[in-house]
Image (tube, rainbow, N blue to C red; front, top):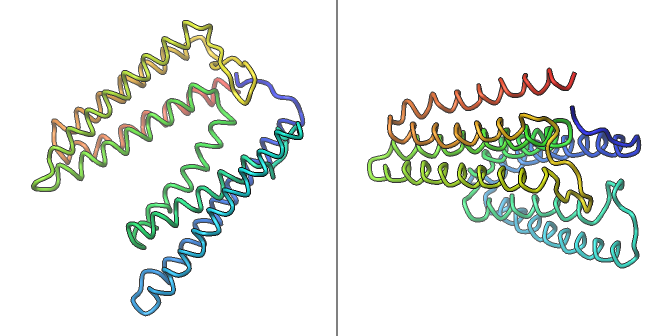
Length: 257
């Protein structure tokens, strides 16, 4: 079962999750409008000017959030259940700055990538606060599997970049070993860790370690299989990664009932 929270903390988490989803939806809508300006020759320069302005606002927002965080700590203010806290502002404006920096670096076409990234961030945030922490780790693993398999497929589909698939497979093996080491380290230290300044139980079920070890193995096997078996197989293994995520999601949802 998920960790029980105090009523004010539950209200804060609910409001925060709703705020994150609202901001991500607003961000996607604004990026769609911005793409219509930045992707066409007649308004391309206007799009770049807007990009620089928004990037500057994002950087200023990060600085503002950092200063606010310092002031909160120096005054000893308890901001745990405040939405407009300095740390939250830093994160929001940092995402804005990263999006605009990516547009300046790679061009307007990169905006389409954020149509996926922003909703994914909102979903991961919901999982982090609503499900046991081990399922959050599993969901991150499945996302990484999909990304590495997609990278392997793209590499195998090109003429002179096949080695990129083996780089993706090697990265998957490294991530698998890191997760296995992390699981045993946490288990050795009593499954407790520091979260938001408090020592808490990191995992809520007895089979959490087994689930994360199994997922680590899947994380290594699928990208390696995709790299060895070809682009077509790598494409279908992306669906296998999401199928594994769906099955584990159903499992943890039933356990929480």
